[in-house]
Image (cartoon, rainbow, N blue to C red):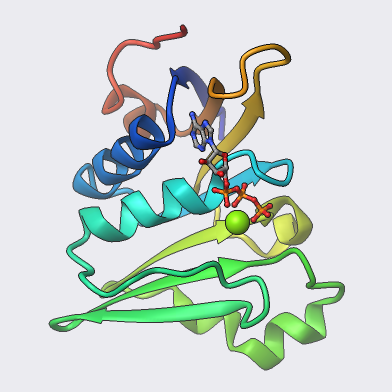
Length: 156
Ligand SMILES: Nc1ncnc2c1ncn2[C@@H]1O[C@H](COP(=O)(O)OP(=O)(O)OP(=O)(O)O)[C@@H](O)[C@H]1O
Ligand SMILES: [Mg+2]
């Protein structure tokens, strides 16, 4: 399937959080985040959690690998694949069971496990600006329908 691209940019942590909220409201169910340390993957994930109505505090799953949050009959899984080194680890984590009609999943460092990711995921690569410490660029890849929902590309 041919994927399409969309470009976006934020100028603050708050804007990135808000972008995460919008992604949840637009019902993207699997979001894969790629980007250096401190690029804003967790900030975006927190926004997403807020957008699906999670009220409890969302913390980085760096050590737990997967954090789970419940909202009514719905589950939000927040995963950090940084330390996943083989497929057996994914199997032990029950990775395939994360994807269900009543779940949504955001995965930081998803490029580490890219062969295991469902084909309908939205991929977001985040890059820091080389001069301005508060600017982040987002390149988003998805199928035609997913990209259309995002509207016009916008760069700072
Ligand atoms: N436009 C922006 N969007 C998001 N975060 C920003 C922005 N500008 C500055 N920041 C800062 O960048 C940091 C992003 O941290 P965050 O924990 O989200 O990164 P991360 O990509 O999850 O890192 P890690 O790989 O360690 O998990 C925060 O300290 C935040 O305040
Ligand atoms: Mg993080």
